[in-house]
Structure formats: structure tokens, C-alpha cells
Figure 1 (cartoon, rainbow, N blue to C red):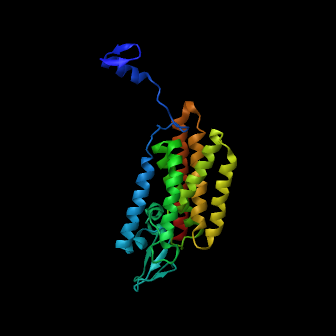
Figure 2: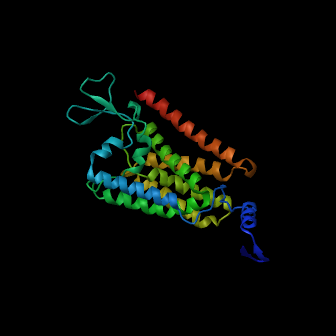
Figure 3: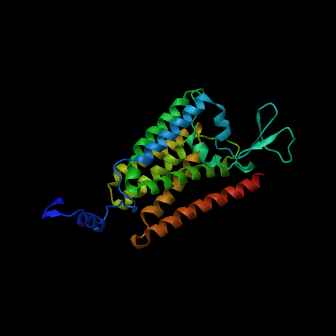
Length: 268
């Protein structure tokens, strides 16, 4: 028997009562979790990838985001030409390496890349720690992970569209997507927008300042994709929530992949 407010209950009665209690949900309909597990895992993956870069620097060239270029017999990178000499081979998304659209988002500049090397991953992981925990608590783990990956993909796709010959790395696109999600969530929940607007202003100013040494295309692409995904997740009507959220995320994914296919075909 189990203690209860009205005396004692049998284990079967307790189990039946637990099944009928409505579980608390996030604003997006996800399960509430006290531990931001997905954020911890994402930070761990980024850090492990960085350690891998330090051990084997060639990983950056192999998995960074890149639209298209050619590698010559001397190991140098060249502008893609069609047709190209047999001794040269193309690399990048347009050469069939679509995995770069996501793998580049888990890599960062190594310490050998000047003053911004080690600072790159430090700033990104600090931002992921602060933003990720908040957004994950409001979306739930599955929806949060979907938004993060779509934001990372959105950043890479805009790089492909606007700067296909520029190699890029970093989680910044995904983090800008989290910033957009934070803004959308705040409006949905009716928070005081003064602090939120100030926070977003800092992010937009940083996008302009960092344009001289970072990929503004990746930042903007992540911001836009994160905003679209967040709107679909938190504004979905309760009675059709899962269907609308799934349609929004799948539709965004399909659009990004279509843009990738069209651009890759044009480049090749």
C-alpha cells in the first residue's frame, strides 16, 4: 500500500492515477525537462570536434562548409573550371559532398588561425550555453534539436548561395537561429520585450561588426531559418500542433534542400 492524502492506496490505483494526470508541456508542446541534455550534448560534440582538429588538422579541409573549388596536384585550392584537367579534382557541396552543409557547423577555427582562432569556439560555446538552455527549456528536446539543425543548415545554404567559393566553419549560424527563436518565444509568451529587443540588437550589431572576419551569410541564414522554424513551432494551434510543427520543419528542410540542389547544379 502507498501513503495518500486520504489514507492508503494500492499500487494499481497509484499507477492508474498517474496515467490520468495531465503532464506539463512547454509552449511548443514538448516535455518539460529540468536538465538541458541536448545543449550539453551539442557542446560536447563541438568540443570533441575541436580536439579532433587539433590532433588532425586535415579534418577542417575535409569537412568544412564549401560550395565548390578544385584541388590541384600541388594540394592548392583553385577556382572551379569545367572542364578541368584530369590532375585536378573538385571538392564541395556541388561535387556531391552535401554532408558539409552540417559538418562545417561543428568545426571551428584552429588556434593557428590568428587571434580569432581559440576565441571562435569560446564565444560560440558560451553563447550556446546561455541561449541553448533557455530555448531548450521552452521548446523541449526534440523540437529544440530540430530547430538547431535547421538553423545550422540554413546558414550553410545561404553561404552556398552567396559565397560558394568561401570555406566556412563554426556553430554561429545555429546560434543565430537560437537567438531568433528566443525572440519569437518571448513574443509568444508575452515577456517584457525591452530586454529582448536590446539582446537582439546586440546580435545584429555583432553580425555587422564580424562581417569583416566571419561569414555574415552564415549568420544571416541561420537567423532566418531559426526564425521560420520557431514561428512554426510555437504558434502552431494546439489542436493540430504536431501536424503543423512537422509540416513547418519538413517544409523548411525541403526548401533548403531544393535551393541547395539548384545552386549545386548551377555551379557544376
